[in-house]
Image (cartoon, rainbow, N blue to C red; front, side):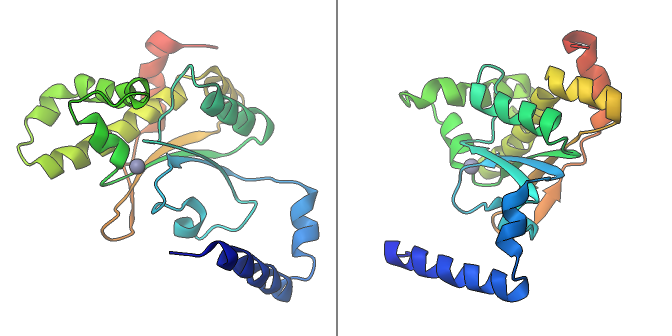
Length: 210
Ligand SMILES: [Zn+2]
């Protein structure tokens, strides 16, 4: 475990290292941000957005919550998407889940989880939509992994449902929405290769907002 004091020690080291590479690093950082990526991931402490992507400060706009969910009445995630798309004009939106996700595991648990109930219901809804496929997987861990993947896909679809994404894409050809899973056993990022334009077309049959 990292001690509280050590965090500030580490920070001083980090500042030193950055300045050694570029004396004006923080002056430049203070000017503005211009990231090409919005990353929506899980709050899980093991899945660190920038570190696993090798990204520097200023390169990724980040939003994290339990289970990497994109819920239409969550003002937090909707504000993040809107700002990222309309103001920052990000080129890519990534929804990243991870195997052995506590949120997804909890959603597969049949008990009252208090305040988590309404949040996790969104993952239970993903299960309901894909019930036949998931019920056919007899191995519990494999079913859990598949639910992680399907949850990422459904959250990508929720991103595509937003007016901001639909409108910006028509005008600029961006952003493109991607679904990833981080394999917690190997550290590797898996691209689920979601066909963004196909999903957008399918979504707009019902959710067209332009
Ligand atoms: Zn998680």
